[in-house]
Length: 313
Image (cartoon, rainbow, N blue to C red; front, side, top):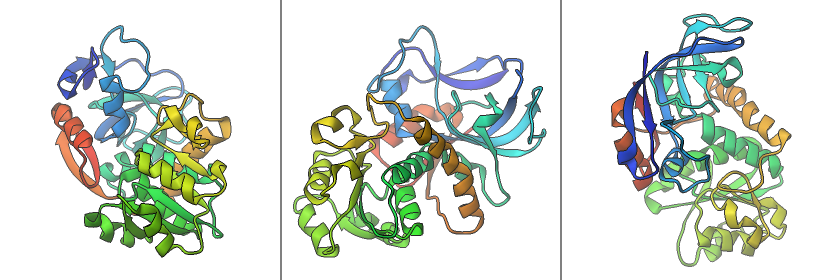
């Protein structure tokens, strides 16, 4: 048996409950992972609250897609993993748990020096950031505007874009300017007059923009400053991106990711782990909560905190 977090109705964080679940027999190509940390993503709270489209609830539903831990068992036809191996799990289902069973394709070896909490913090943020930058073909000739630069996705966007030679301007609160600068971006405060402040720090012009904030201001300023709307993407306002003539990746977008976009999301993990091992990528960790306090973790992610929230079984 394992402990897991579930919800049986849509609603506030209080609908999250702890329960005991049976660990299913391993199928071919599957591994069992003893979870040491699970990443808490904003999408988890949106799905729980019913604010993002999902199948009808017909029973208790598990939560979470990112985790890190150690392999506790391996099924038939599994290559590359042994019991005891430290791994990162991403793109899985139901990772808010003490133990999970996943396809080996949803796991990646965790290098020495990468903690379980850092590993659990990677999945959705790095996959989303990397895929979006690849789709927009951001590179050394670009000046990129990132809205929401101090969040987990925004920080990943900044770091990849800087590594790839782009100049990056990122919005945040003034309180978070130091973190944005540390990652290599030029910070600008959001709020009235944003377009003029961006022009002042980037007189050469903005060639691409990524919205990780979801505000009207972010979309309006992006459209105002970027000539080619095909190089503007929102990660939050997918439902109304078409009305602005821009692209959307996730964030409620009615268009699923293409095969190559999905491949980029998976490619992000080994790329990022290599960067972490080389000391060229940074993850800002926020508060951690015990697994049974998942409701408190969801309140924190909805209220907004600095750094990535994790659950510790």
